[in-house]
Image (cartoon, rainbow, N blue to C red; front, side):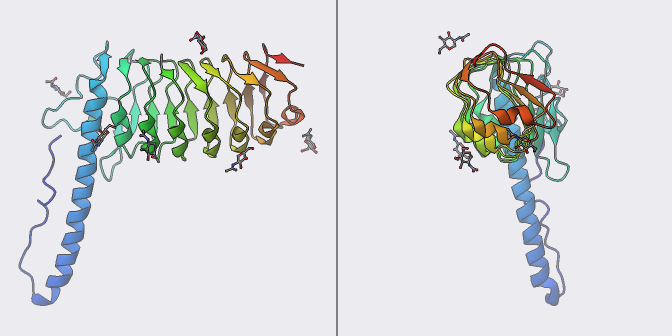
Length: 268
Ligand SMILES: *[C@@H]1O[C@H](CO)[C@@H](O)[C@H](O)[C@H]1NC(C)=O
Ligand SMILES: *[C@@H]1O[C@H](CO)[C@@H](O)[C@H](O)[C@H]1NC(C)=O
Ligand SMILES: *[C@@H]1O[C@H](CO)[C@@H](O)[C@H](O)[C@H]1NC(C)=O
Ligand SMILES: *[C@@H]1O[C@H](CO)[C@@H](O)[C@H](O)[C@H]1NC(C)=O
Ligand SMILES: *[C@@H]1O[C@H](CO)[C@@H](O)[C@H](O)[C@H]1NC(C)=O
Ligand SMILES: *[C@@H]1O[C@H](CO)[C@@H](O)[C@H](O)[C@H]1NC(C)=O
């Protein structure tokens, strides 16, 4: 991407004295806006090239046009969408390209991202904690990869999240208690991983939650009665796991529930 020099639009023309001060302050404002926007998109271009660097296999060559050539703005690269005003990356969608590699920590520098879909690839390694910098992220789908390690606690800073799917990976460790602060979540799928520990009671705070799956993990303990507060649930799947005890009665009482799966646990 060829960048305009931040100051190039600041041409000072002679004006009648009365207007000089006003004009000067307006043009200063414009310069500041331009340079901030340009710096942001420069950061984005660098972060995208770093993201590409951590991908070792790209069988469809989808990232071949992600390069430094002139007249090749990153907003037109495959998988990228930008905001029309500031040319910052708002969407990263690389579903199903069989990409192999790791997810670069530089992802956290794409600070205007609201949509990330890396579903159905072969990303390995850990989910970078730096995703916690993406305060505008609404949709985060890493399902069907081979990611391992823990669910980053830092995801709880992504307070705009509505869709979070980490389904079908090799994630281990406990479900962070802090995820309960994602009160805008409508869809939470952590199924088919190797998660251990209990179901955090804090998840009962996510009142907008409609679809909830923790199926196919190694979770233990009882089902917190706080989940009975999730009145919008339509889909609830918590088996197979190693959960025991009784199912909170309130969970049998959800008006919109259409799928309720608790199979292969040790409930009584
Ligand atoms: C960079 O991407 C552009 C746009 O797709 C393409 O025309 C060009 O061949 C690429 N350059 C290199 C060195 O791969
Ligand atoms: C981007 O992210 C990396 C790794 O998280 C960091 O080292 C770097 O300083 C960040 N900032 C910019 C402007 O690239
Ligand atoms: C976790 O997210 C917070 C909030 O964005 C940030 O301050 C912190 O640096 C992040 N941690 C890492 C390791 O990136
Ligand atoms: C799941 O985690 C347990 C305990 O940490 C470990 O023994 C087991 O090998 C893991 N299973 C898989 C499929 O990764
Ligand atoms: C979330 O839920 C837990 C347990 O139910 C509770 O102790 C906590 O105060 C709640 N947090 C918020 C922010 O509502
Ligand atoms: C079930 O829902 C009804 C109507 O909202 C309510 O009166 C009742 O107390 C609920 N029962 C349980 C066990 O939550």
